[in-house]
Length: 389
Ligand SMILES: *Cc1c(COP(=O)(O)O)cnc(C)c1O
Image 1 (cartoon, protein in one colour):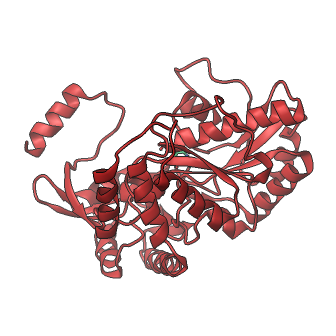
Image 2 (cartoon, rainbow, N blue to C red; image 1 turned 135 degrees about the vertical axis):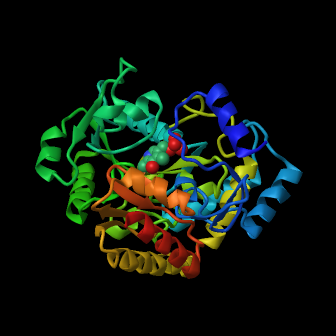
């Protein structure tokens, strides 16, 4: 099919939940995506922070296909080696104790929310468990996670939403203290609000959250679905803040392009969920886990240092562009505050000129593959400059 045939069928046959851009992707290698029309694009999106090793990385393809030829799926009623490998790698590198595997970011957060509520009920005797999240946050699209998402725009149409969520302004320690009650079982937040505009939390606020949680026996949940797995130059962004969350959720980057997510639990809450409490058919699928083993193997200290350097390079070059007023984010998760043109229009114009890039609220957001080269960064920046002009 050519691109027009595909776009026509898409509009007729697929529910229009996405405002799609004018690119029909066909193949890719590294940070280059090729359309069905044969046009090449530099990728500053990595599938929204998913393809951390880029398109079709050789080592990743090999790891995934080797597993695919051996065993594609078995019920979670049985054991598999790829699952325990990923769990071991994640727990060893974070000091967390155990993992629950799901298939997406929303599912990772659902597992965290259920764990927090059971922890509140069983360990603290709370009947009306409440969870504090932040205004302008994003935690997913399921009923619980859109309720957790502190943005009015998501709280329409699908009534009734879940009870038990309170919303606090990011970085407002006084407001947080007021919201915390005897019914609070957890505080959940992104270290950098991704969909909310690539907004970094203040270190002092994150530290305060940690100490309030410790003092009141409240679970501190870090949603690292977008910030995790090397994206910011650390395995997880919470490491920058010198804190230790009780639950860390992850997804996007970990599978290198295959659907896998999950939650890491500290000693305090790693045995809250028991047989029958929670589960999913596909969670921790062996092929997705084989991809995750490759991703985690590759993201070693030297790799992370490289991400930090490339992030600094990209930030500096962005700040040299006259229309860029400021740059937020960390590592290779950056948001450019721009003037003179609307972010959505910049993204459309950049695509036309051969660069895939994202928005986050009124910012232009960049989440390139972590393996992107300096030449590719330069080429993408040249296009971005033209699109901003
Ligand atoms: C993308 C995202 C989610 C949701 O992940 P899905 O895989 O789309 O369900 C949750 N939290 C954050 C911070 C995200 O960026």
